[in-house]
Image (tube, rainbow, N blue to C red; front, side, top):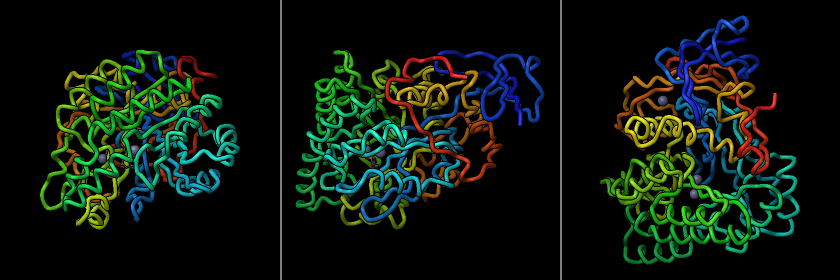
Length: 470
Ligand code: URP
Ligand code: ZN
Ligand code: ZN
Ligand code: ZN
């Protein structure tokens, strides 16, 4: 099938221009005037719309076990929701268990996703310990699996948390192998202490989730990870940055020349700590880690996106039903499964609150939601841009549509929407994954299993190369 997208305004991370696109065999093969292209089987009229590269969401948790339950959204519902929101690639976190082969964990994640994903996907690999066995397996994870990013949790004591020795060795090994190390930066030991204190005082409501995970615990862990990275001469990506304290640590380390990147998420840009105080246990809908912060941190995050102190937007999609899952923590906030449904609304919120409100430019929007993540995680320019030879992962985005985000209209399986009632401008009208239309006029028209696993390049290989291999 040869397709033409005509009359649209093409937006990349660096340019905005009027052009038609010609798509063949799942790739972009022409950018320019449609008269110069070959024969066409299907034409998509993008008049009045922007054409963006499909979103790359570098941070999802689909079909993930947590706190005795499993996320409501799996690789099918989660990637369909993502597609409705304009995201055409996700990178999910493959969890590992101490003492078990990494290969076993990777196989588990392939089993969860194969034949289900609506869009292309890849995995980051969690490192929880650095044993001989892990060290021996890592080269093959990079070379054979194409998994080129490792995740270390500095929080979730007695569950996912790794010690500093593990983080430091992971950084050193990653440097040698060409992997990017990612950290969940909160001081898990301090949080564990504060949590026990709160429970001893009978403080069991959802708001205590936020109050026992202060910004200092995030700032401290972020600073520690940055310093260990500089010491190892390695590279770091800090996931879900929520506060000025953490932004400052990243900014300072970057100024000193460290190879460090930071991500924030839509929820931290538009929601605040007071959501956890909602009556009738509704605050549990907003329990995730790090927690929502006092409102003043939002301005610091927007400013960091504008100035480049933070470079990407992930969703940290990790959904649990309010009814039956979040309710596990009705009498004890530590039993509320952590996470929220964000993947579908990630790009819409950033466009509406960012571009429409003049906080970031249109090109920054594309860089933050797509291009930068593709570059950092070894997928550029196959993913993350509009250029000849790139995958035809495209979003025809109508900026004139006004709509209200709601669980009544979202496409995730989870029973609530974290942004319920929020008005946004803009709608991904048509979404293509490798040239195939998967979202059309509010309908999912693809098939689960259309999405493929992507083996990624090592870190640094696709950071600055602007040319596509033909
Ligand atoms: O609360 C969250 N964010 N759950 C998912 C796991 C993580 O820390 O990213
Ligand atoms: Zn995390
Ligand atoms: Zn996460
Ligand atoms: Zn939707």
